Each structure stands twice: as C-alpha cells, then as structure tokens.
Length: 378
Image (cartoon, rainbow, N blue to C red):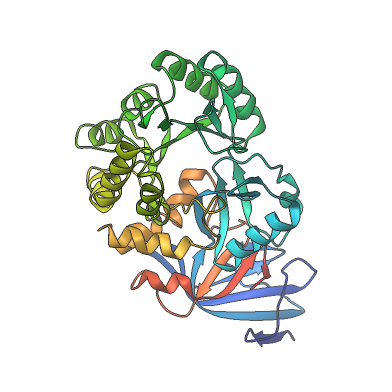
C-alpha cells in the first residue's frame, strides 16, 4: 500500500529515487485548451498514467502550468558586468521561486555552464556574449568590435551559445547625440547568414527605428525591446516571421534614463520619452498584425530577477488578451525555444497556482508550488 501525502507546508518527493511519485491534480493546463485532471511525476519525468506501484506518493493540488519562460534574462550579470557564482546562484533561485524555469539568457559575459549540473535551478538557453560596436554599449558587457570583425565574432558566439547569438543593433551615438544603428547592412547580412549556417538564431537589442528594416531584411529571427516599431516596419516583421520580446518592465525605466541624460543629450532624452509614451500602442499594434510576442524581463542588468509575472501583466495592460500573454510565457514560448511543456516523458518542470491564471494573470505572482526536475523546490 502506498503512502499518500498532501503537500502543505511540509512533505516533498523528488521524483528520482525508486518508488517515490509526485501526483499533481486539479487542473493541469497542458495547453490553452488542453486541460487535464492530473499528472504523475515518476523518476523526475511527467506521465499521464497512474503508476502501478509506488512506495510513496506526494500530492500537489491546484492549477498547473509548465514552468514559465523568461525569454530575455541575464543570469551572471549585474549593472557593472559579470558577477561571481554565488550571486548568479541567487539570481537563478529568485527566478525559480517566481516560477521561471526556462530562461533564454540574452547575452552574458559570465560562464554559467555549472548551472546545467544543478537539478534545482532553471534551465538556461544561452546566447553567448553580447556583440556591440566599440564604445556603443554598457561597459563590461559585450565584445566591442568594428564591422569588419562582425562575422568572426558572430561565428564564435554561435559556437559558444545554445543556438542563439545576441547583437546590439542600436545605441546612443555620442557624436550624433541620439540612438543610431550600429552596423552597416552588408556586414549584418553576412553575420546573420554565418549564424544560420552554424545552426544558430540571431536576436538584437533595438530601441530605435533606424536599424529595424536592415536587420529584418537581413534575416534576423528576433528583436529585443522593439520600441522603435512603426506602421511601416510592423508589416515587415509579420511577413518575415520575426518575433519580438518587448521587456516592458524595462521600458518603464526610460523616463528616468531620459532625465539623467537631458543636459548632455537632449535629442536622445526626447527620443527615449517618445518611445516610452507609445510603448503599449507599439506592442498592441505588433500583436494585432500577427507578430509573435514573448515574455522577457531584462533582469540582471539594472533590474532585479523574478519579474516574470509583472511582465505578463504589462502585456495585458498593453491590450494583449490574457490567454495570449499567458501563452507568451508558457506554451507558445516553450515551443518557440524548442523545449517541452507538460508532455509525456518531459522533465517535470511545472508551477502550481491556487486559482486559474487564464482568468487573472496576476495569479502568476503567487505560485503555490514550484517543481523542477520532479522536486518540489518552493
């Protein structure tokens, strides 16, 4: 006879040792329209068949989602550059406890491969180190190079990363006093072609308008922030299948940044304010045009970790339907990154909530239980 326990303040099963099983019941949101009554975690993996025999069963009850995705996050990085392993661990734990169990690390100078050996931490898809123009990005973050070296460095980071490369597409040009594109069109085309040849996708940091058409027509796969989208470029994104990760919790900092640069760069400050003012309209227009939108927080630079629920709420505030905003951090996001959700045999990375997150995305800020590799971690 098995020993069935309900998880409350105590009791856990790691799903890995022989005979121990985690039973997740209530409403299991396998997909937006695929809702099941229960699943089982056996040996750290998901099953929809009740085990024939189990020494011990631990039960968790609630509304269950696949582990959330933060598609723009920086573990191992803070406002000053790379951090030590202890700090990176705290960052990853903060994300985990917020329900983020899959991270696309959109550029970091830190080596965080040691996280892959930890059964209790989120899974990370790395984009290598940022590639920026000389003196055109945050100090200590990026490879700072000139256009003639772009193809070489993109190839290097494509080999170093996990299928992604991160470019800095625009940044303030101190001579111009405003945001300008960082790379000539020919070099961008060659660099993106090299990444694709090596099996990597390419994304780029872009605040302004100027760099977007060249990047998209050159074959880029994704744009981060994308505040510079306009009625002229949105259809191009939709036609070419280029995704965006708006990072609205980061865009909220634009007024403060603009105020800090007002005296020295008034044109840049005014530009940043305009981008901020129209941010919700920009995201909604992109969504309405059929552009794929995914959740990303930009945590790890100047922002704290654990903001995934806040970013989903921002997408809803922008006018994206709650179901689509939820999918942008759950089912659609995992499919886009090529990682499984709550499918048979997948690693048991899931989050349990006390109420239906489809009805109110603010529920995401209050996870009851976080399960990583079959272990109840929070």
